[in-house]
Image 1: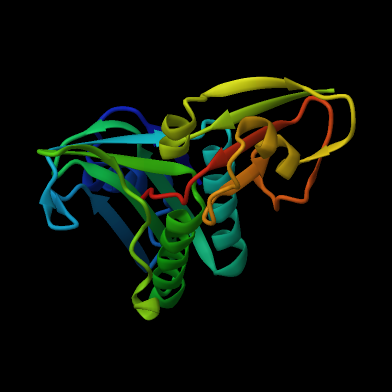
Image 2: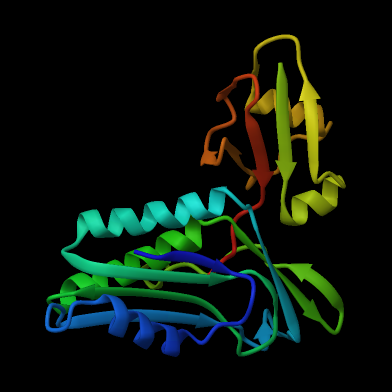
Length: 148
Length: 76
């Protein structure tokens, strides 16, 4: 159940495959659902050429660990993996990887979605974007699909 | 008692406060800690934490606590 905050760029699909090969018992899982969030080069009608991700050290780790523990308790999962960037990012850089493994797809799908939505609403990260007009803090995350 | 207060993101820039140590003689709440930071009422979307857990503004603070104020989170 690794939860890691990464100050340097990471390769989410490589990490996902490596983690699965090294830590998941072969044959035990029938499903892996994964979400990868990456940096766009546009937001609110403007080009964004860089971004800084700040976090509250100490609280962030607690929130992330708790949301993975909640997913493991609520769903029939074999394992989960959560990686999140902090620091200076460029467009296309991966920001977050959330993955869940289970015997059947329903648990993996549901857990991946729940972990991601909880992360978006509770985990203490803040984005500051660099645009041609200067720097600006992102004021809120987009709502989940069903809330739009 | 001593309370450690931290501010993050846009709030840190607005207040010009990163971290501050507050000495207080009486029992205090999170709302009292905010009033020690700013004469302005707290923004409507302001969030707060006590010892790394989300709390409401009426939460009582104990000696040595870390109180954090911050805007809505935008990770992921």
